[in-house]
Image 1 (tube, one colour):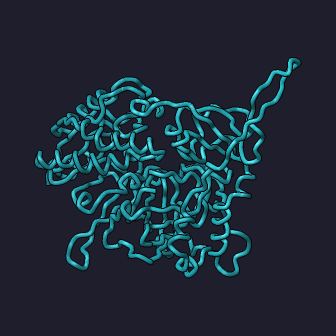
Image 2 (cartoon, rainbow, N blue to C red):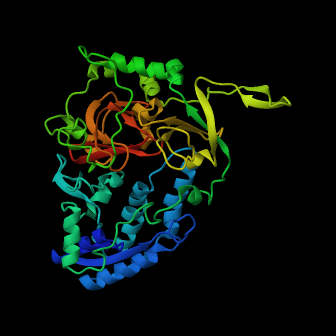
Length: 481
């Protein structure tokens, strides 16, 4: 079999190529350039030039042919332009997921096939298995990588059966330290090379500067939302009442609506063996979807919810009704007339920003507002009015949500044979961003979308990002939030 390895110059793809060569495959390397511009990049240089140099040396060391392809036009059209458009609408896309779906396993794969390849291999930390279905056709399973600190299956959550059928992941069953060891023993030029960071093929960027290539900077208000707002907000009250009504009989207390903050870094020291959040990482193979146990929400009660109630339950709280009235007052010994905002029990204007489209839900850095004991987090953006809403502390009510919705057109099943039908309810483990520990959830399929009701509230659910659902270690589907 002739295999094309997407050789990036990093240690992961280098070892992937080396292992395939050792296993007897007819291997050739193809390096793709996807980005030319340096505006907004923190290093200021074209990193791809150094990466290509290292990749070529790796290919020479392994003893495989090396080729180059420029896919920058496709990348700009299918990834970067989409990214600009999403940010302009106040949504936060994931360019790495798009890059894999649109470039690595589409445009790049097509080039590889034209060069005679039978399959394409990458350095992703994930695994693939196959079995024969009832109809006699092969079914491909996408599994998490065995290294829990490097599992990259989330980035491949939009791949299709056709794409998986032609994909190989040689290092998916190897942990990162072992990959480094193999590279060092083989004296590969990439053995000590640091892992790439930032946007796929662009690198680390100053996001506002990068986005300002197309999105205009306009000054607007930063409004801090106080806790009193939620006591009076009708929608927040609806969510609380609805969640309480779904609880199993015998459950004492109210449904949780505020998350306990846990780092998305699954190797974090806070995740000890006896930690209650350990279940989010490991799961339980004896339970449906690998969940830790049964949900505290009653399945029959969930099933009885109307489509309209589920839709409202999935909507985030909004803050446009926090308004500020001005008043005239006299100041100083000359009693000079000045204008100020009347005190509002629900919120306060605490600063200025350069464009609401440059911020995302859950963001902490870049607000440049002092005078608070705890960190401020973005809890909402209003693109039309160019306003950012923030809350103080990890446990601020605006940071947490219990339910999200994926529209019908945005639902993607890797395992098409597992596609949910309308009115079906299943238990899966779900993550809403890379490196987040998997969370127990109930998925509810309705005519107006797929609803994900988490057992525990989630921090920073962000429109435009991808939710991916797993059955134990298998990624079976995903969708745009």
